[in-house]
Image (cartoon, rainbow over all chains, first blue to last red; front, side):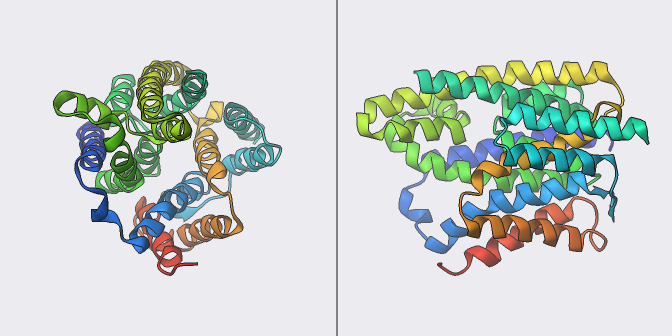
Length: 104
Length: 213
């Protein structure tokens, strides 16, 4: 990705995310009282974050690729089931993935 | 006060992870720090650099971040009558309207509006400081490490997403939504340009949220 695009992503993301926050502080509550909209909005973070897990962990470009990252994800999942705190989950994933990467 | 501090400290760890993920995606240390200063909403920042890392188009990265940021508008609607500010102060209040500041403020509801306002500002500014300092540390650290795969950074990023979504999966229904979104994103991966399967997963949210349950 070109240097310009990276800046565009940075500035575009920042501007939109701020505008969304500011609009929230400025509009009356009844404007978004629609129950369906609220249900969908509550599910959006779950859908997007879940998709990001597989897009980052199991995909390279447009192909499903199972490699060292899968080992990291499996360890992260195990750590989450064991109720490990966030830093432990991330570091355990990184260490196990790096190990598989170097052993390969 | 104690709530605000403990929340701010926890956020520091996410900040390190974001800084590292951002650098692994190709952003500079300066750009990573600007993300945390200007965007300042963790999940959206992770999404933007995540889409870039997966080879997606710039517009997909911005769209994913914006869709993850829509919940901040709902928080703003709840916080506006509590903070009651105008002008520059409203700009500041809007910028620190995130999961943590809103969560701590709402948790003070039984102690009255003043405690809620106090919790909002303390948590918001505390998280802002910690998030930015730790983003720099994470970005700078990752920069000096070199090849992301060699240090497991490429697995740390999806693990971070898993860690972000995990605490939200409080009911069986929400776990089904998460599993469906993962399956859907994988199925459409070979047919869509990189980055779009992430955006398309919003359809899963629409499908499950359409009817009341």
